[in-house]
Amino acid sequence: MERRHLLLSATVLVVVLLGACTAAAAAAEKAAAVPSSCDAYRGSWVVDESYPLYDAASCPFVRTEFDCRLNGRPDTAYLKYRWQPSPPCSLPRFDGRKLLSAWRGKTAAFVGDSLVANQYESLLCMLHAAAPGARTNASWASGENSSITVRFEDYGVTLVYYLSHYLVDLVRDRAGRTVLKLDTVDGEGRKWLDADVLVFGSWRWWARKRSDWDYIQDGDTVLQDIDRTQAFAKGLQAWARWVDANLLQTTTKVFFQGYSPSHLHGQEWGAPPGTTCTAETQPVSDAAAAYRGQAPNPQDAIVRRVLAGMSKPVHLLDIAFMSQLRKDGHTTKYSGGSGPGADCTHWCVAGVPDSWNTLFYYSVLTAGNS
Image (spheres, helix red, strand yellow):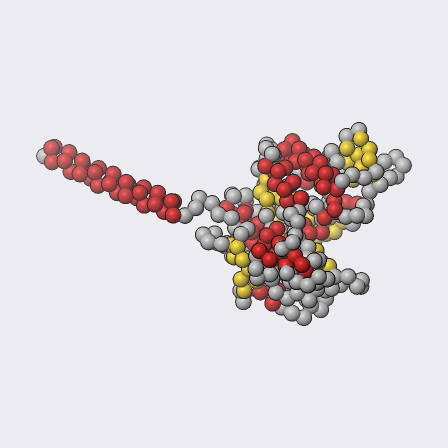
């Protein structure tokens, strides 16, 4: 009887081991067939009749300059495009309630220029549409410390936007002159420390010909001006040092908004000279054509190099390629301004920034950043 019991146990053990080996082999085969990672920022724009994800007219948080429909834009095709990554990648549909629940009791802060505000206000509208009955409180602060704060009371979630063109300190000296300090983030950074999630972005103001400062200070060196690309690199390195010094030992999740392209020169997508984003109603269909004749943007290489050298993990929201295809998505003459020029830098809301935020949402989920 005992021997029969031992034989039965041995048989069961063999069956279990064979089953485990078969399962392991199947898992290994599956792993070999599917890449261990995918690049969700490579893909194409596809028409999706369920888009847009919200009606900007029903969103209380979008500024007039971004609301193209309010400002009279007659076409609607630009609202119907969804970003679809190349296989085997796929994006989950944005679930605003799920994100609010994941962020319950937390603060997410967006820090940067008006392109960061573009993304921030898009996300507010996406969350508001997902939870239309949620109680919200909003406040605005103007002046040098300009900010927007919106709180979703039912979830205890706060989303803040801090205006910061350079991410480094901009101060006044004793003579009242404005100084751009390339090596310090102390004044700017104090207000960011309470956030659980931080999204940064900067570049456009570094490249402007007209500056809002009187001189630049880099350590003990004072300059009237400096090569702007070099200045950006120095400023971003100072920001990186601040992040590593202040956030390395925290659970704060940090993201950086990649380069958002303008569409001022039609030759870049094969259009005749003099063409801009004005009157464009369709994306670039040929991905290669989107970069025809366009010099690489130095900001992109600098950002990648600086982020790679940091101790604190920072996720790059690599929106450059996908946005380069959307010559139709800018506010153009529908930004509410009275000037004759077209805005080929900022984006309509609803529109392209919604897909940036779907990728941001994807990054939050896949990286465990909630």
